[in-house]
Image (cartoon, rainbow, N blue to C red):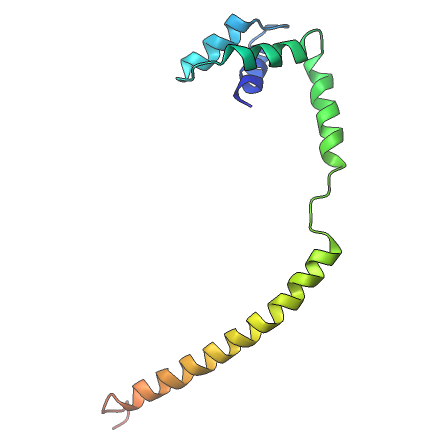
Length: 112
């Protein structure tokens, strides 16, 4: 991802087709040592492509991805949540009983 980001920064800086050296300068300016093989792969993949079109195609791909959970896992999670909810109710009751008994152990009341 860092190599793509460096490429995009070089494009924003005015380079229509950034070179390996351009991307390495950007990466080194923030203290990242570039892996030449990975950088070459990114440059080869983006060679002779309009970056605006690449971004638009990526957005189309992302828009087709589901964002939420599926119905079956959600139903299974709801089934698993029911026992957990019962446990929480029991915990609240136990905590309330403990707090009431602690008030009685204090030895004085507000209106005594």
